[in-house]
Length: 261
Image 1 (cartoon, rainbow, N blue to C red):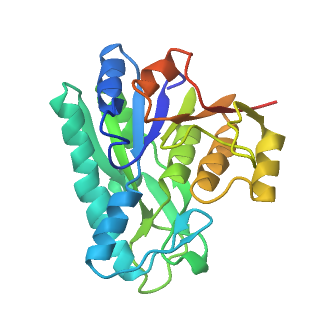
Image 2 (image 1 turned 135 degrees about the vertical axis):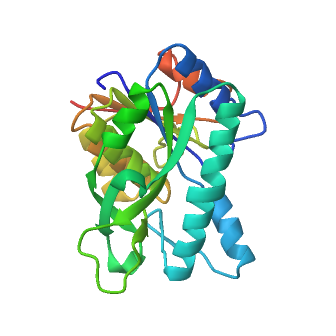
């Protein structure tokens, strides 16, 4: 698995000219070993609004009560996951969709009671991923987790895990060669909005502490730092650019590199 790549994508297309699905199938046909982790925050927010359920975020993570959790499981592990899998299979990919609950892949506990039913990954059981990769499939994972650790009586069996955090934990557990975040921004920016092309661990931590890195970029940077336990770099790139993933794999992508000193 040392050459395996974890790619985190949004739950819906990043733009009308999005080429991510095409790029993933192309890389698979080249023999690349890939694991895809997806979010779906925009789609989930829309479905919650239809149900009259408000949305609130704390440090880039969605506060999840029981009603929100039920919709999240239906939308992320259901509709969003299957739309991505269908798009990839329709382009000639060999793809299987699953959630972090399947095969007890993402074993988790409540991260912070203030966030509600948001999970913190305690263990990644990589067995199912190894089986799928060995069989030539791309696993496409929605970040719902199994509530298997310190579960209070009566609490749900499923937790909503931030997809960026899940991608980082999977990359570490699999010993991935790299972790790539495809985002809807150019990368990590400084206080003036200028793109920062390279960040050391210390520089990234300082941006987090100062609040320059904020909202949805927080879990991406945190997951990148977590991944550096087993890799030398993590990349945050603009997935709206045509063939951003192919350019990234080819070594000439833009964006932000967070690197180990």
